[in-house]
Image (cartoon, rainbow, N blue to C red; front, side, top):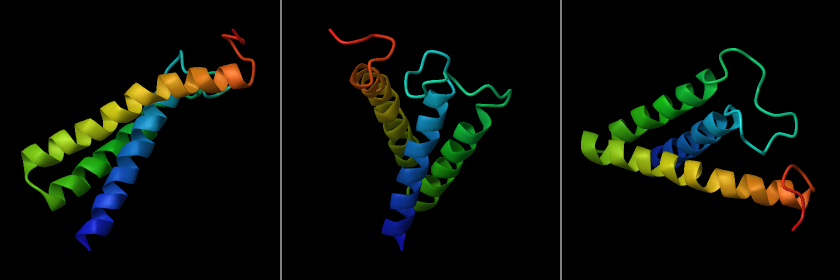
Length: 97
């Protein structure tokens, strides 16, 4: 059961961090730019906090917090590079070299 919760917590953290990135103004994943809605940070923060709550139910507070932060930082580090790669593949803002 704890493995399922750990996988769900990790998935919620990845999706939450990805939604935060999609809400940023300079992201290159959405061709139309960032979400035009006013509360675009709400889905990302909700899923991220759900992920943290799940990790807190599995392990101590220090381990849960740093596991959660590691997942968020991993996504936030990879998403810009993957976005540029995707924009180059479709001939977007940066074009082909």
